[in-house]
View 1: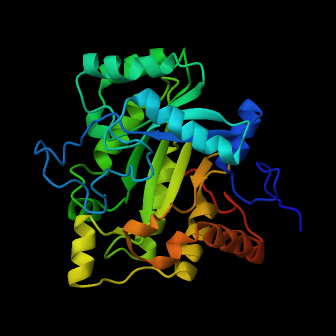
View 2 (view 1 turned 120 degrees about the vertical axis):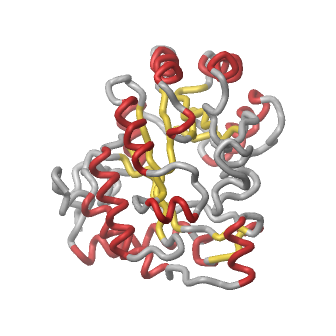
Length: 315
């Protein structure tokens, strides 16, 4: 059956990141994760200690090669690894670990600006938090966008502020929405991350998170299943008293429900994360990312559905 979804050339029923990049650049691009040595305000005592309860000690940078090394060495090692799989791939410099605008602007310029001049970098993507951006930093990043396209990635994670507090995020949805407003019209592209299966969240809570994403209208979204990481605070909780986690079947239903209410033009960078097997306590099924992705494809076909089928701008 041919897909009824227009933003696809592979019969997918959602707007994949690979399709977006292919349409924009005409080739494969690989995101190369980098660790620039930043931290987070909920780690260093400014807004708390320990970081987000679901984060590992690497601050989401578990897949980075040569962490702690010179940024250029990290990038070259990551691009070389990517080109073993995709020989003609170009690279996106992805500042992934911790909050990569959590520093005074002069320090950010010193650390980040050289990367914009690397000839083998096509785009620059910067993971951060809404409380680590202000008008001055956004203005500077907007100007850097004339050199290379700039993406800002932020963790919404949940629309439920009680969950955000329980996860020690140190900010809520109000701060994120205000930051998204500051970013509009700057030329900086935006990507929001959400996590399904956070402790205590219902199906309706996860749907409300997707509805908030639809209202905020980022350029892209990453949908993750909660990974219980062994060296995270949540991992310690799970060892002491295991809490319920979504099965793969439940997760697939949630993701398909969420895709149906997202705008069709919104790029879906992920529909599941990469579980690092050596550091993963649960759920074990998340390690098999391709199996989950295929299950989402099958469920959308079974429903005769696609991204945006139930999208309402006013939702």
